[in-house]
Image (cartoon, rainbow, N blue to C red; front, side, top):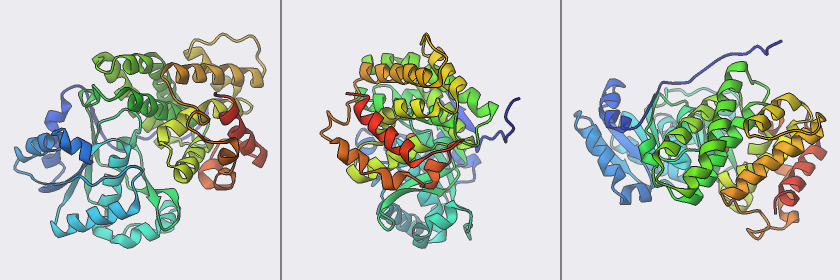
Length: 389
Ligand SMILES: [Fe+2]
């Protein structure tokens, strides 16, 4: 019997090469008169921010550029940008950049009209105990990397100084423009780890409790596209066909995990990212084979299907053997695109195991569609360290 569930897509996505040219028209259609263009220094320095601002200005929409985004979206940057947004009386947010930028843009849109205290009460908003007094400002998001899927997801993942952890603030975007041309030439190592972030979204969406046949469909297709095109894009960063397919995969994975969810893999990535400031995509790449081995015990058929998509041939139908075979296929992919192991990055096994208290019983971790024991978390941490050298 097929699993029942709700099919959702938060907001429209305008996809395709050259669609960036429509940003001004779309901003106007969304009712924006004065936009805060949220981006980072690198995007600003290569002239992208000014280019996008000019396209928007052609539609008689004013633009204020704020390029103070920092990696992992620290809450103090959100507060700083929101103060500028309030002072300039903006009525729209355009986010242009990678995951940290899009997450920052989403949070800024919620904090401008509702005040900085939102950031002290993220848990209340996340658990539905509190709703915004004022609807977040209209936001349009434009990814420049293929990984996060944040343009189509409900939450903004923030590094909270107050709570000393990474946590999700609900702020659904209103519109996304996914123009693959923006990702052409993205450096190989960023392409590699952002691509594996998208892979991990698809993988975890398949086994999170809210998975549906619809989210499964998008997740499997994202895995197929990433397996085929990620090594090509890493070898040839200017390959336009690879970029198009990865941009689509990243967005599909985003829609899939927004409808379903992510679980222990992302809980682990958030914990390790927070403790040791390791990039999110690298954590996701390294944890994914271990998650597949863990999930195969509950979902052997789904993990087998991932393997079939990746070209794995199976010599046993035992869940453990399926998990191992598919986990190894993902490790092979990670090696091919040169994801460094935790050992290579200088971390000890003890440092990795020290993340356990931040993972076990954490709500995101426990949203797996099955049982998770304390030993499962320990085994996953051991496997992600020892299994990939
Ligand atoms: Fe992620």
